[in-house]
Amino acid sequence: MFSYFIPVFFIIIFIFCIIKKVKPYDSFINGAKQSIPFAVSIFPYLVSIFILTELFEISGLSSLLTRVLSPVFNLFGIPTELTKLVLIKPFSGSGSLALLSEIFTKFGVDSYISRCACVIYGSSETVFYIAAVYFTGAKTKNLTKPIIISLIASFCSCVFACFICKVL
Amino acid sequence: MNIIFIILITLCTFILIFTNPEAVLSSMLNGGEKALDLTLKLVVIYAVWMGMTELLEKTGLANKISNLLKPINMLLFGELPKSAEGFISTNISANLLGMSGATTPMGIKAVNELEKHTNTNYAITMFFVINATSIQLIPSSVLALRNTFSSSSPSDIILPTILATTVSTIIGILLVKIFVKR
Image (cartoon, rainbow over all chains, first blue to last red; front, side, top):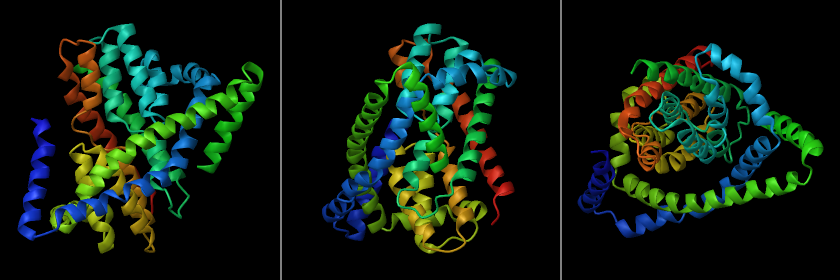
């Protein structure tokens, strides 16, 4: 049902183009040509985030942090096996997706751990990536508060995810 | 961001000096390469979505959407500058509908627009938190992965995911309302 959504939405736009006598080709080109400068402007931010993620992983800091934080996360009902996913998700979407398939192979796709991992993956966002990209060219560099709030909210959703997967 | 960056990068490099000094530069380059890959993918996604969004604006549909979302916007952000409102509304509706490609260009435009006005710190924070905890209706990449692993019921996780992501967004909004001054 959801797969119809985008095409139907586009059709509505095209019909409106005809009704409103907008030049669809020119307008599309006008919009699309902004994409390259736009991607160029976010590139350095992406590089810095990816470098951090790589170093974080390869230095062993992430597994160290996983070990230290596991007992704390356990208190909130997050299983030890999922600590790493909770930690990686705010930094890297592709990294956590790779981790997700690792978890599937290890525990079986329909196990509690795997279902839990899916919900955690699906319900939280890559907070640091969004912070880097959204504030491209912005003057406000004071992002501490918004980032902390988002991380707390994401953590709550992880706790909730582990709980709801037990119930459902 | 500067503080987080310097702490993380110093700590990681420091550890690697003892464990694996060759890995420092190679993993930095590796990270850069991944960033370039992603950027190339994003160029394409943005080209399509920014093209479509231009049509959305030119046809006046963007204004219609923003009128539709006006009550929600008022509740979340308070009074908004007219120029930013369209971008914010399109961004929020794209978020709700899971069109993740469309959210980012609109989001950046909205932040830049908000920045031109004074006293928009609250709105910017709220807007960021909503995006960083965004409600996702269909976790499509997870569903695809569950399918490849031949799960007996891949769609099992949709309802819990929607519930969990709603929880995170509501908590985020409440935290902003409590801790950020208007």
